Picture 1 (cartoon, rainbow, N blue to C red):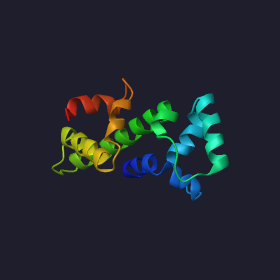
Picture 2 (picture 1 turned 90 degrees about the vertical axis):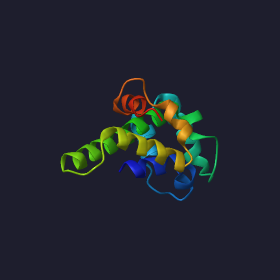
Picture 3 (picture 1 turned 30 degrees about the vertical axis):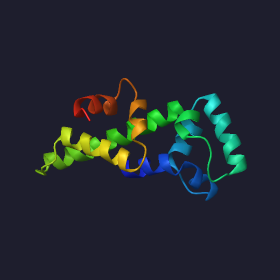
Length: 127
């Protein structure tokens, strides 16, 4: 799930143009501010395959989706750790930070909410 959310951050415009499901779009639609929803309506109307960087238009929603993605991933890694796998929470967070960077959205790590599972974990990972 977490990897799909990262993918949805990077494929926002492509998913709109291709009429594909996208978690960020859904999050903006259902939980975004009025300004974010109005911006999304304009983007959906034109269905262009590219546009301004999503974190510039939808900062609050990107932050929320990132926190959710990292929180879900850390929950999954915690279950694996409880089952005896080698990965610990600090290792899991380091891995998540690397995945954001590999996908080309490492700069978005700064957008994690001040409070929340993802933000706390990023500070602890010290990457």
